[in-house]
Image (cartoon, rainbow, N blue to C red; front, side):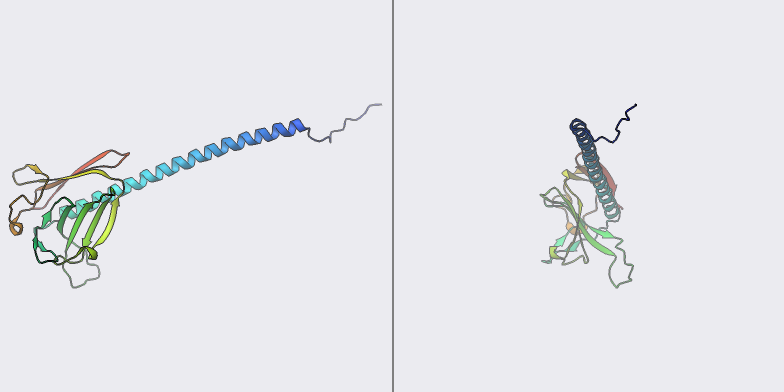
Length: 202
């Protein structure tokens, strides 16, 4: 008589332990791979955001500088300020022509804008809805770049010499010419150093 083999036997303890070990190993590998993908995606998103911020910043700078006009202003104390200026705190302020007015409001097309490199390594753009008598509390502030370093700005004077201050010392504020061009340079890790030259209209 042939005895039939019982094929309905259960798993042995060793088989269960081996299966659990295999599943655990696969789980660890899958988790490590997922973490690596998420970290790579996070790094890629951060770099993409930084590139977009830099592109937006250069677009703002080009628009503002290319449409700068030689219109001096008066500050909140009534003192004259040059049409374009650069000092130790506000990197650059200027009078910008071409302020859009889609609603057809009764206002000037001129606007005062300023760029500030803050101590927090941020590049900030300020803008005011009026030229004369504006105060800092009235400014519209936009953070353009985070973690920017070594921001420098130079101006090309009529003698084709680059200087780091505008207007020149002892110049008449109301009659000062605009520079011929503005050079911007900064570092944005890990992308490195970025430099641009923007021409100023005559």
